[in-house]
Length: 552
Image 1: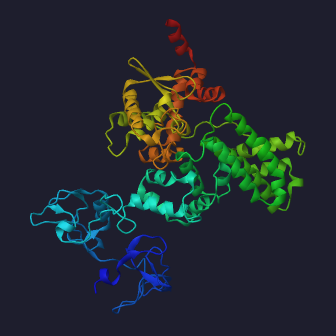
Image 2: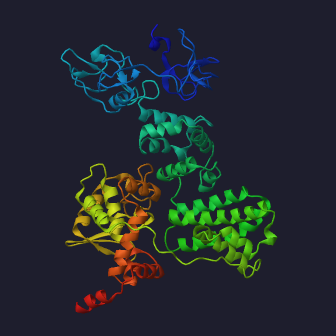
Image 3: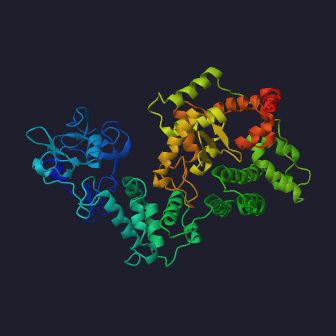
């Protein structure tokens, strides 16, 4: 028998995916993903590894690194590649073309129906399976759509609905009334193939089964789930489905993280850090949250301050000194002039001093150093011209606009990523953008790109903020109703040839050399002290600006 007939496609007993049966264990069919292959000596490299193919026809066991699939010319792209399937009437097909054809069905050249075109007719036209003499039509038995399938005769979209429904009903046999909208929310959230892979992972499956067994769901019950990205993703799903109300996610997530982090510390360390975390760090974040939303950067900074306190106590204990012997000399040795470490530990030392535990103890901070790296003027201006003209077609519109905001205004990625349509206004022929409290007028070339970005955002339902107050200009490519993560945005800029830190250094020096520090501070969202330092770095005065304002 051929390989296809010897290993028929059936539903896997573990993940439910319809795929070739790799092994039958205790009467259950297992696919290649779920079958734990035995560990044996590879006949080629000699290492003890899981085998990809067993000894047969004189060929020894081979591990995955040494095993190679059949190489042939793909019938669709005409490239010599590993063959993914040889069962289509059109001939051998590589994995890339296999997925592309199933994900993008088209009109059949014979029956004119929208189908997965896996064959050719006598005239050379692309046709569907039945028109080419095959029994495979890739038609979903549930919705009738053609395309890629997960469960047998079930498209990926319907498979997501089915898998999530089964998980939610696992405990009681029926989906709880307050969760009936969750399967449909999963179907319409992001890429269905990505969602299907998420549903196959052990942690998400356990989470869905757990909430399906509860009579009611609250944010506290979600917080009780195991920590990790799966929990954050589940909460976002429940909020989108209307099961949970929106909340200040970064503030609340920080509070949960603090509780979980403190339980991991030694009891005598937790006894010291808990009051500091609760009454100093969290209190500061909560007070700030009353006036403005907590950002990712603020929450991450708070976490690092608590970690720094734990690292200091651990360091003293490892060196046999203990907390009781924390002296100024020992503290100076630990910080060792490191600016980042000194900045993170300073609030903890200040708190120890203010509570009377270590009066007089303080962190020695060095003077703020001048920017060590600044982009060349010609290179900086060339990048601005490049992103305005859009000559590099590999850079998308969002990256171009973000790069220009960094290059021209020195904007930080943790501010750019949360810009919304509410931050842009158009008055006549002028366009304004609010990077801080005071909007700035945007030059026409950048204004045109910004207007196009606003239009694209308004047409993307995933970019709408959960509170409905504006639409994100830089929505997350993975999570609905959330902005892109600033780290991800920074990677986009780096791939486009822009170093946010170096480009920002040049932009800030250029701005503070032309404008007073107070104006830069109000328009760019930095403190007056920071703006003054930038002005000192630029070593310019404001006489030209004052004269220009006086002439008006």
